[in-house]
Picture 1 (cartoon, rainbow, N blue to C red):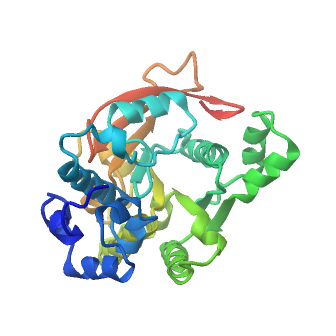
Picture 2: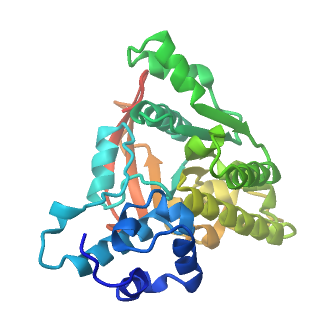
Length: 344
């Protein structure tokens, strides 16, 4: 590629590259990344710079556009962001339609009433993820409800007509962490962050974790609902957010976090002496959650798993609705079905 000036000048000439600090420039120089070609082809550049993968890819696109304005971009270089398939066709179609496929660093929330099928969906996503990835990428399933069922995973895998060896391999790539309290959940993620940070450049298996499923955050947070513990609850959410964002941005881990929602009738049945952190007076049941307004700004996508309005005839049907989307269209839905082979 023709040299169009030093790398630093080109970075400063791009909209997103202007966010690169002198510290980042020194990091590039220290690693002998001094030209445009070295920059766009650098392996795991977002990790080296501690930036999000989306941001580094955007900088690459902008800097290449400066260099090759008169040449078709795709004939020289086109770095497509990594996208993971959920393994559920209707869900993948919905995610493409709203502009937010599952990618490294994304933080999603899956909400729904109790027993609607959130855990089953998370089980299905865990299985589908390891089956769809060919490079030994792993899933960490954080179980706060004690609902994780390894036999259910085995059943879903057997419905795919796989060999026993393949099933064992896929099951080995799904790790489980039990965390029944907020402190245990936070400690588990902090320990993972510590191990990932200390294992950079090593072959430790935790570096292969690319998807974390939490089922569910509400179960850990429920003890922080009283007015007495409200500040503790907010402190917990703040610490949790910091850890999640570091894991997402610095280590390209995607998150799907399950949470329960409660109808207004269920909320009114709570202890009158407790001051709720949920949205008091909300019109929609999906607005009534235990985590309050603060948490609503953390996730880039919020999905709601619901029973259809008329679910008497087909009680295995579910509708998945988009409640909030930070990257695109903020509405949409798709139909899902509960089967012996998981949710399809």
